[in-house]
Amino acid sequence: MAADSVRFELVSPEKLLLAVDAEMVVVPGEAGDFGVLPGHSPLISTIRNGVIEVTVNGAVTERIFVAGGFAEVANDKLTVLAEEATPVSKLDRAKVEAALKDAREDFEDAKDDHAKARANARVEKYTAMLEAAA
Amino acid sequence: MPSLKSLRVRINSVKSTQKITKAMKMVAASKLRRAQEAAEAARPYAERMASIMASLSAAQTGSDTAPKLMIGTGKDQVHLLIVATAERGLCGAFNSSIVKLARRKVEELTAAGKTVKILCVGKKGRDQLRRDHASKIIDTVDLSKAKRVGFAEAQEIADRALAMFEAGEFDVAHVFYNNFKSVISQVPTVQQIIPAMVAGGDTAVAGPDLNGAIYEFEPDEETILDQLLPRNLSMQIYRALLENAASEQGARMSAMDNATRNAGEMIKKLTTVYNRSRQAQITKELIEIISGAEAV
Image (cartoon, rainbow over all chains, first blue to last red; front, side, top):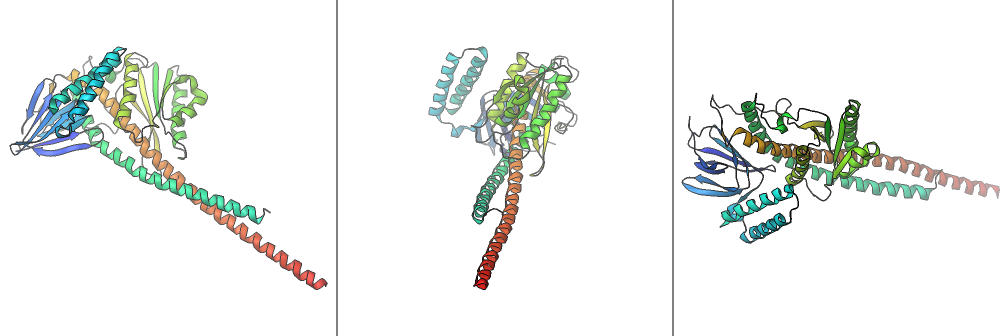
């Protein structure tokens, strides 16, 4: 029953960001990147900070940076739940660098473990973002 | 009998009040539309999350190692009540109906010998609850600076609740909000958020039909649940805030509509009184002139 495309949906809490039929979608899973093609077996995975690549007609049409979330594959349908998602083309290097610096400073200033963990998460996020923007 | 001048002043003041309530109604109507759109936009995420939760919990049933957020601490001694209200008044019974519900729950719990902690979201609820439950209020989240409730605000509240939960400061958490049914009907609702309610209720969604296949989990169920449950918590708080925002505008809209109508009635009544006393005065003056002329 394998169709020739995967229905890809990217949802954030605030809205449905993207819904396309794709040939292949590469998702940055927690345990390594994985490509979703039609006929993929059902899977639920967490996502690390990274870039989702959507391939339509043999070419990568969308590159979207996501900061963590979940992916669910079932019946030729891929759903990605992400709290934050930005198309790579819209990432601004200078802004990301400034945010990274800011986060690093917060990490230095953090007093308790909780604040430290939060600042660290931000540092990791912006580092990944910077890599994606490069 | 009030003088003609004072009647005129009153009519004018009611008229300007009516103008204000009419404008507030229009503003509430347009804000309501936006709030409804936001609630609508959040639905896909909530649905998908519920379906992942359903698939996961189906795989998890029977396991004793399920995270505490899902199965609870095994006690129900300390209750946290998150009471979401508005930052502003003039919206009918909106705030007081939530507070009434929360108050009933507080009384019920204290009667059963439980400890109650209250986290207020929004100024109005705090003001009303402070009267008789001041000692139970642990904090208030101020949303007046946020123009629209975003996911970030909900996450902040969830983070706070999570930190408290991890520190063992409470066992069960409920959130109070108004569920938006329609412009004229908002239902005050209480929802248990910790431990997470997976089965039952209208939020339970069955996972997709896999034709007998089984989900693979990466890295594994527990790690995913560990990450999913806090997000699910933020999402439920976010949903409550969105419902509340829509309800607030709906309640304000109908309250202001009523106020405008009442002002209209009042103007009508006052105008009748005004015209009557004006005519009475003219008649009186005429009688005085005629009787004066006859006496000559």
